[in-house]
Image: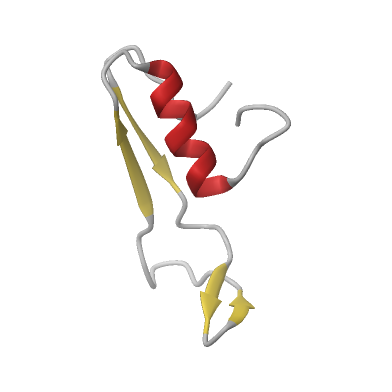
Length: 65
């Protein structure tokens, strides 16, 4: 299924490096090697809290990534 906000080990890392950037108030394409952008969600086994934090970052999703 791929990466997502929940992991059995209690934390998940989501790599967001390839997504678009906000630069000077505009959306700009990502430049490989220019930056590293990641999120660490460490909620132990509080899966609902992990999902809520993920939705605060990304907005509601029709299907979990």
